[in-house]
Image 1: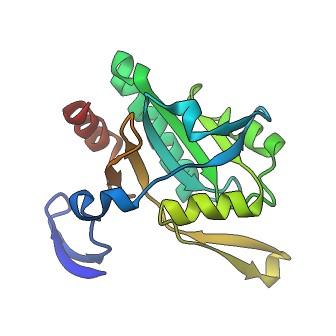
Image 2 (image 1 turned 120 degrees about the vertical axis):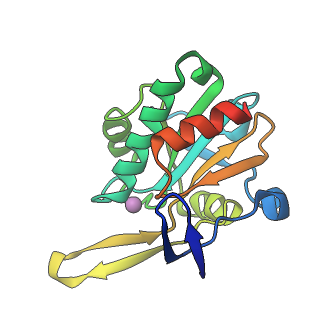
Length: 184
Ligand code: NI
């Protein structure tokens, strides 16, 4: 966290600084072996040669995850033909509840190209570690259930799986669309 000036908001706010891709890009990303929302086993190799917009979250998330996935949908639609070589991917941080069936029903609410990935706890943990994703269960006694606390970034990966940049909650669909147009 650091105190920085946000030009777009026009105010000084405390927030996490944008990770600098130049410094740590090679440390973000990596191989994964998971199961898609149709029940098919997939690895990163299935998406080789494509740009990827990757988001980590969980289907029971009340606000942030659906908002960010809706944002990806808007960006894909806005990019039109330019989005043909972009694969949007949603990876769950909550594989215990986000089964293949749950993921299938959820991704259908968003862009038709969106692929939902789940898997065993170990496989998911490996992906979280590789993408430097923070995720933790938070018990909510009054709900008799739990929620997930998690970091929220949309990762733009190159066709050869290098991190190009990460988008934050504050980045609008219009900003992301324009940024991607400059990069691809
Ligand atoms: Ni969420």
